[in-house]
Image (cartoon, rainbow, N blue to C red):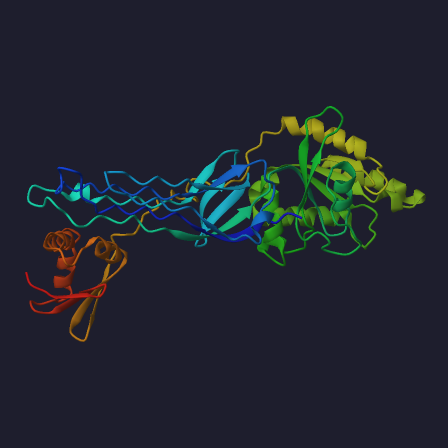
Length: 425
């Protein structure tokens, strides 16, 4: 079974906090600030690898957390940076955030940084000035980032088997590959695509995918149509599996046209794929009606398609079919239907620490937001120099300007993360 769509939550590591420390050694009882910097937090990175073939591992393990950076310490010692957390996914995995595609990992080793680790905070050594020689504050590390992602695997297959339900696709795959698909005589047996590795004699090994049976309207998303059709997008060669015996009242000519209509509705570019026709279930055609198979073969070959009379159940015609596939694949220039550069926007991760909001309630002005949370962590409210630094920071970040635009007057109460003061210019 191919698990092709999962949702996960990733959290980066928090940056280590900068240290507040002062040099205290023999003969130097009043040394200067020597607080070290915090280490960088670990990032969460998704990396494509051919060693993984499904997203099945993430059905039950859905939350991933990178380690935090180490805090700084005395004697200017910086905390250690944390290791990144690398999540391995199959080649061909698309990554969505908030319903928008942000990455398409289509080759071995390609990676995407989903949540960047927080930067380490500066120790108090960085805030020493000629007029402030003993800063009693340091900068905390950046907070961790949490993202909810959807991973979708568009299988990378050389050959895609297409056709209506119960025409013999799963049987064919089980006969020519190492796959063991579930097979039974009822519709929609295959609810998930099956992959099989096929090697014919000394030919290069190739991947064959049994695409779940289609229905009319699939190209417009009817039933599970769009879920199934997206797996066809990355196949190099299509094999139409048709019930040539008409065992369920099907007409192979009509089925062929219907399937191609669904492919074209979903994506006109799919019609550029080379197609081979497999007239299956020949073993249940009565001897006196075998001539009908020859007529069907001639009909499809006149349309320009290599056609084979087969029985996946009894192996009839499968050798000729495989020879044709291994001879055709090397001649196909393959340009998979990946997302275009326009569709995958460059994603720049921001810490969003410069955002704040001002709300007026009962005559008081409340300033909230990520930036306020960070600033208050850097302030020592009992230290004059730290409060002066706090005031300059609010001015430089535009908080005072925003308060004035919101209508603040001298003497009004301003509250920032529980710290209240009267506003004066």
